[in-house]
Amino acid sequence: MALYEFMLNQCVLGLLLGLLFLPGPLWAVEVAPVLTDRAIADSLTRLEEGQRAVRTEVSQLRGDMNRQNQHLWDDINAQSNRQFRLENVRIVRFE
View 1 (cartoon, rainbow, N blue to C red):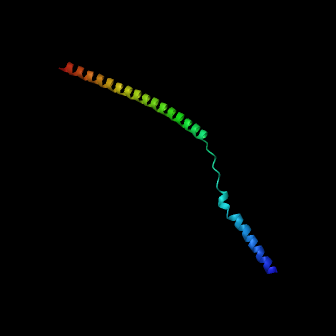
View 2: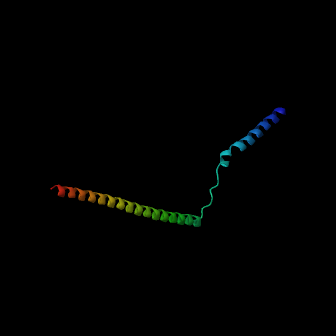
View 3: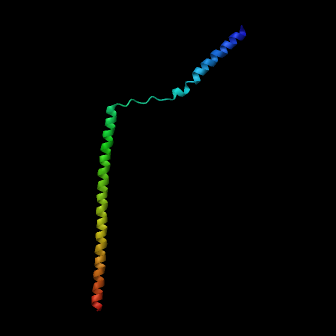
């Protein structure tokens, strides 16, 4: 009878351990939050507003860069015009 009880205890212990460790990977799975159409629409609206803001800022930065480049070219042209006039004056004086 002792052998029978020992075998029964071993089987029960094996089953309990099996039940404990087999579904272990199932416990690691997290349930995803439910996404409703309203939540998706709200997120999309926020993304579109952010995109509009980024486009506006990029447009302003481009305008600033273009104005700065134009300013630089104006300065370069003015300086080259002054140098050209000075060279012409020198040439005229020496002739």
